[in-house]
Amino acid sequence: MESLIVHPKNQMELNALKSVMKEMGIKYEKFHNRTLKPGSASEGRSGNKKAGRPTGSFRDKPKTGE
Image 1 (cartoon, rainbow, N blue to C red):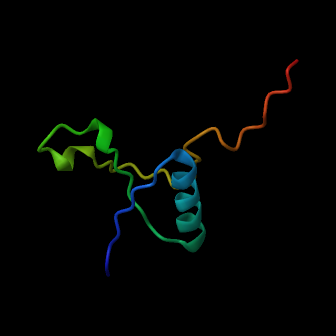
Image 2: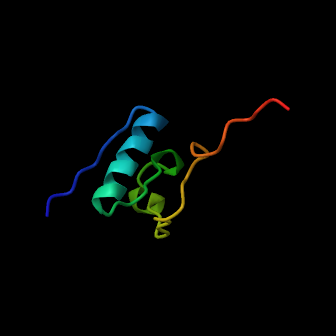
Image 3: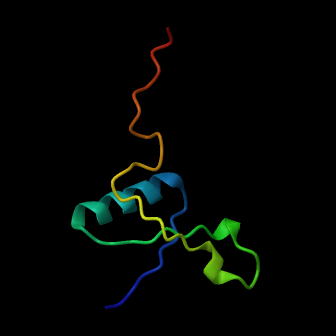
């Protein structure tokens, strides 16, 4: 099957893409290119797939100011 590499511009786009893929049952891998050194493309891939856990605090309740 064909694979795609996407480049979201911001965290909101990344969260939307991840939500759609999760809802449709599409498997995906996380790849952080900012941690790579030049010429070491295989070091950035993570074998840990945390499919059931949210990665950010976007689901947290807003602070009430107490």
